[in-house]
Length: 281
Image (cartoon, rainbow, N blue to C red; front, top):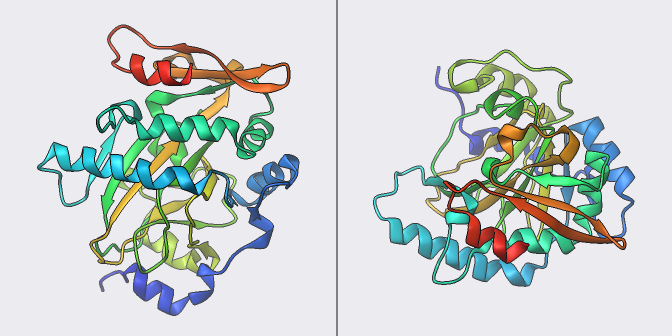
C-alpha cells in the first residue's frame, strides 16, 4: 500500500494546521517563556521576528542566483549561505544582520544559556526547493546533521501556506531521545503516520521563523504545486560549547554595553566567506 501524500494527511487531520498559542510568540514575550516552550515541545514559532520589508529583495536575489546556476535538479538545491549572491546583494547576510537586531535574538540567547554565541555558518543552509508531491517521512537533526547542535532556526523568505507551497511540519511534543532510523537518517513513514495527529504544519507569514530542537522530528511538506521555496536555516550555540570543527566559518556574537554585537569572525584561508563576514563584522 502506498503511503499517503501530505495533502491526503491534511484531509484526515485538518487540525494540524491550527495555530498553537502555547508555542507561538510575538514581540514582547519573555524569552524565558519561549525557551521553556521549546524545551517542552521541541518547536516554537516567533511571529514577525524579522522585518517583512527586507524579504522580497532577499527572495528575488536568491531566485536570480538559482536561475543563474542552470541545470538545477527537480528537487532544487542547497547552498552555503555566503555563496548566494546576486550582483552585490547577499540575502543571507541581510537576514542574519536583521536577526541579530531583532527581538528574536534574546530568545536565542536564553535557549543557549549565554550571550556569548557562535553562529556556525558552515552548518547553515540556504535552500531552494520546488514543491512536488511528497509522502510522509521525517528526521531528527541529532542524526541527520550532528548530535552536538542543540537547535536550528528556519526562516522562509516568503509566506508559506499548507497546500499552496512547501514548508516544514513537526511532530510535537518532540521525543526526549534519538529515534531509530532508516537509511538516509529518516525515522520512517510508520512513525509519522502513527503520530500525525500530534503534528503541527504551520503557516508562515513573511518575517516569521521557527526554532526546533535537534530531537524534533520534522519534515518537508510537498503538495505538487510546483511553486518555488527559498529558505535559510541557521544554527547557533553557546560559544564555549561549540566544537571547533564546526566554527569555520563562523560569526561570534556577544554584547557590548548591553547591545548585541558581532565581536569577531573566523574563516580559514580556503573558505570563500570573507566578503560575507565583512558585511556583518
